[in-house]
Image (cartoon, helix red, strand yellow):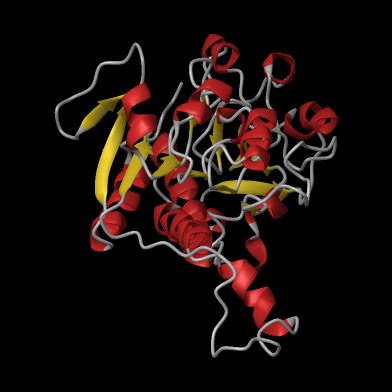
Length: 320
């Protein structure tokens, strides 16, 4: 039986999940609820299989793990794994894809609707005495806008981006997809050049990976191109946005609002310019868009399937 280790397993929230798909594999598992980066080398040293979420396996860990043959992430992104080092040592790396689409798309629309209906402001006004003191049957203190006939601009036409687009159509919105500079695209979707895209969209929603080309994809210049009535949604990766530039744009009224499920550092132990209660029309959630129980169950089962496929000599979801 092979030896396997699961690092930082509590970050998957396993307590309410069925883990039988993992335990039925011919693998002797060691589970670690938490894992510091400095502990990774020691914890994977004698194992052939390592499952991780956010615990990094970089070149020095790979060099030391002489028994390691397979790594799978409880995530889509693999930037915490040194893929070149893994390839050099003949280690197969797989990721998980598509498991959280329903959960994330649902969260995106929660954020869009909360911003466009001023939901949080009206919720507070209903209980802090303002409604009781109103001269009329309703309060009209905050802006509410319809989504019908507005344009949503989506960056990324994968499963998440197209999932958001389907819901947008139900609201009667026009959907456009961004054509980022220097990229070529199929004709499957309506692609709009980047600057024109930003100038056109009433809602901009980010669904692309973080790469060297997409870091700071939205900066001060891009925010200035957007409509003053537009809102920005990010459930992808925090570093896609220049956070100081976004803070400045919201305070100055350059755009109407933003809602984020991600920050450039998570958790934000060193602070973040966006964690400022003075910033208007900003919603931040703590990377919780993917957390639906159904999504996490699919994630565990998919990773177990990755291992099973590798054991059969037919790796799937292979990135290296």
